Length: 473
Image 1 (cartoon, helix red, strand yellow):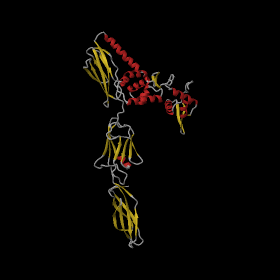
Image 2: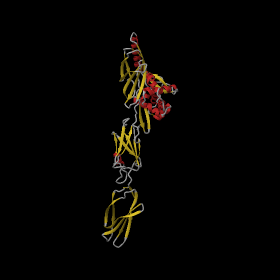
Image 3: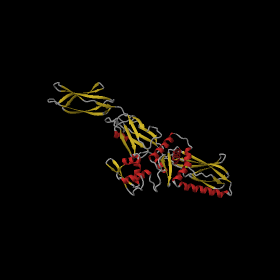
Image 4: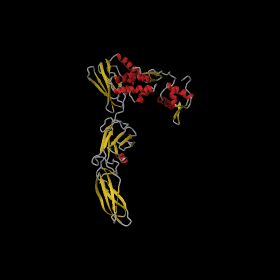
């Protein structure tokens, strides 16, 4: 296919036994209309004539007629010549121009109106800010360009994609993108926020005395928090103090009940609040008792939260309660369903496993786990310093002095009895899915309790380390 209005060469060869030159006609036919490109004498041999093709999209043929000195003629006709004078256009993009929640993982998909010259088009696409480690692929028709990102884009960032005039269709030598050279094709989008929203958490101080230096600690707040603002108001709602920082101090000047509110703001401007009341007594004999009570409460909280069950209880009473007080929507149903599915696929995983692998904050995890336990869909068990979750109806394994799941104990027993057992067969013996069996095998392999090796198309498990305890099945 030749580009409309582009310059090409027409080459032909003539020969005759007696004449040294011959008369020729070159006739061009475009969509049924014939015109003469050349009329004259040419020497015997090869001749090359420049030809500027029509500036329209059509199909053309060229007929060559030769006449010798005796009047004999012969005609040869070329095959159809496709002409393309229509510039390509960018039809659609994903994400769309102006999108405000583009995925940081990508990809960027550009769909053009016709087959493109792939190499030139890829080089014509640029990003601002720059994006490193991209890779490209095309659909079989050469119209859809997919750009994959080697690393995720920055979240909540405006990106501009420029497609320069080097982007051309697949004709020879190529039509530049529509609008060139006066206009450069561009699109702009903003990436999504993937960081969990902030949750304000503060150890509530319920009592104090006039003149005491009271510390308010919001350092346990979760999320990408960049600012902590404390507001203290009196019983009538009047502003008493405004303080900034994760940990602040304040002296109350008069007895009464005060409302303390911590407001946290993350790097994306999202906020969350938590409020509690402080009862302030007049200065006097109660100071020592109040100080002892507050100190004991802080120490108890620190010791209680040092273990996972204690942390779960503390987060349920603080972050979970605040999360539960917010309006609920379809997103919360999706989160609860994801947690339930995770527990069914990974029975015995801990609270921290669930939070880390599903990328959730303390408020969401504790609230939805509590609801699932209340609805009798999951059950929990405290084993050592861990709190583990199981589907309702599954027998909770007895503690064995280690961190092995019941399924992992059974895997070790089977593998010890029959080294090299295929994973698919092992899953059948266990009565679980192949996916769940492989999940626990990989954990055991990471702990150097089993070794996985592939023989042909089968993945097999072999024992490593000490044999499983007697009596496991």
